[in-house]
Image 1 (cartoon, rainbow, N blue to C red):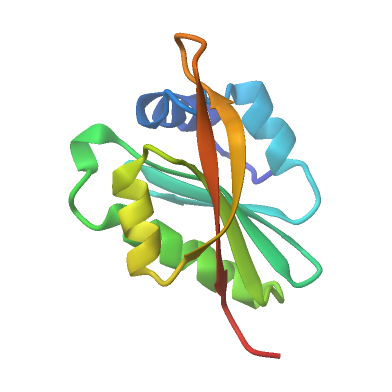
Image 2: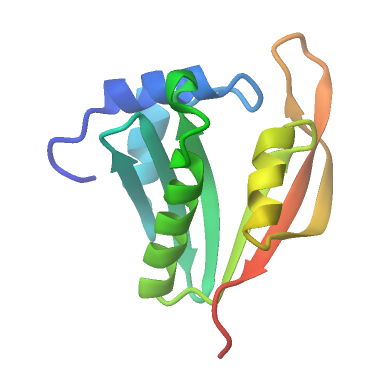
Length: 144
């Protein structure tokens, strides 16, 4: 895990950005950051992206932008920064999962050329206990 990382601030940002899927705790963030192939990009503006590269596949684990900072292009910047880092780490394809009712995120991903490649039925649980599907989206980052 990177030195000097403020896990409390990252967990607070994640909690502000997510209800479904549920936000990640400091402990969960630390565990992910200690995992093989995982990287974090955090901006001074309240935003972050976290990804993982294994072999030539990248997975966007999370992308979060504070509510007060939305609409300024930070989500797109974090997505592009994630993709650049994944490419540097040898990824050819990027995958992500997004709640089927997260229209703002889906719009962003589609505008960046992600396409639906799967569906996970009842994947996420909302705070009220109801379920929501996850769309699996993918994008070719580089041709072999």
